[in-house]
Length: 282
DNA sequence: GCCCAGGTGATTA
DNA sequence: TAATCACCTGGG
Image (tube, rainbow, N blue to C red):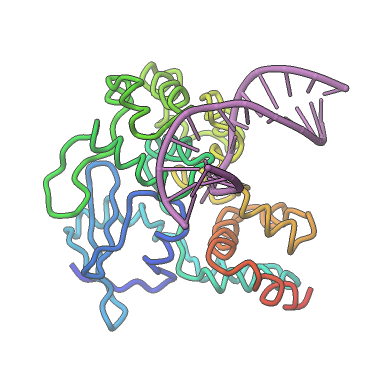
């Protein structure tokens, strides 16, 4: 089907904004995403519309929410504080990014794995888990396996988990699987909780601290006021905001601004930050 | 071969 | 509360 999207929607930036670890750009220029057992391939046309290999029904029931299409990001970008020139610049730089609504279970595990790892290493570990313990999907896209369930993870031996490069995170992943499988943590029912309760519950899992919990809140539960702070965000706060965390001033959409900031920090050469941002006024 | 990567939890003062 | 440190492993 073909569709026109009248809002920020840049697949390249969405993938490069570090919120998902399995989506990728195919050699034919199409972009492939996966959630649960559903995969989609999207091609952008020269006239700005998009062609996807799914039915209208699948688009409306799965992908519309996955890409957070009910939110107007162009409008969100106008919410930058008048005097915050740096943020204005970063939001413009990251225009097209959207906050994906991913599977909570997969998001928990992938972000536990992400600690102290480079992005290529994270992707490799995640694909290894899927290949070893995920369900085989009908071919058509390059993603052949779903993300393994808690039970499937627990059926792997610790040795096999370690073979995916999990290292000391192996115990964390097992702990997460046990807490979810046993029902100690009910991922579905967390949808109705407050942010504070959600983060607190997630942090019962070993290896889930402030940063990972906020990532899960933002990228799986669509809590766009959650603003995870990692080393890249910290570099901007130290170098541009003189140690003051600006997200306190952006309450309800803080997580979206955080994502613009992360994308900027990650992709704009650090030697340019001062010129592009600080000299922009303030 | 070295350094460090989208953090966290334990330990110490 | 705040600061310090070890931690598996692999990519650059």
